[in-house]
Length: 327
Image (tube, rainbow, N blue to C red):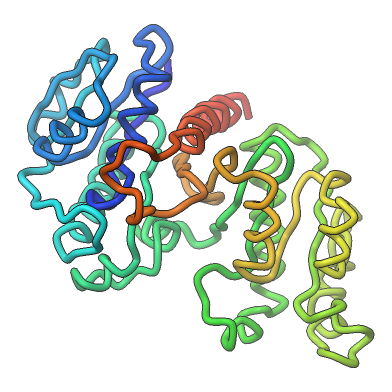
């Protein structure tokens, strides 16, 4: 049995809704235990939109020891005012606290894996929280030094050498040291988390046409190519021209792709896997997954959000957890 703790995400978005829809689909006390970190009033209001098809109990934050293995346990985060469809200071603080408590649950042995619902970076900002996203916050909470945002589906796995950076600052972070760490983190994750003993990794270029022999940019010649050649196992290839790489479906020939920046890999990944892909934070001492989409404020509270990516997040979290136990 795997013990999963879900966070509510931004309570003004679709997070609570897709969590309840997911519980309806995956609830099976013989296979998994489900814990849900969410204000009780938000849970009960969401239950009017998504009727629970599972047994549940609501407990207070201080009562972790009475988590019921046979029921979905909702740990009340305290009353929180909802303003559906809008990022607020309250929603930012609630989503942040849920993440903090999810890590505490795993670190104290009450849960095995974390599945996080989408947060709003704007709501974080409104509440004075200085983290650009889940990845950086979870790395800080777990003291992880080498970590990676990795997008996962049955069709492809895509890692990011840089995460939430402005385009104008990306080239400053594409260094030999950072790129080497990224490749090693990705390689270790493919082995330990996905059971691929000899992973084949494709590395994309940074510039258009991968620099075109230095005529458009020199990062490929001075940084990316030397790092690729330094890997003695010869299982790292590139740098590839990004548009041609995806246009020719070359991703299917590799176990994972390493991109230089966010949209370089997220656009093709989501075109191929929207609602079926997930976000996984490689390099953490615990397993954390999430849907590959955002808060969807525009459809929040309407009961029409798809839970498919959240379901896949739960299933992948279980797979990765079991792979780690084997390695």
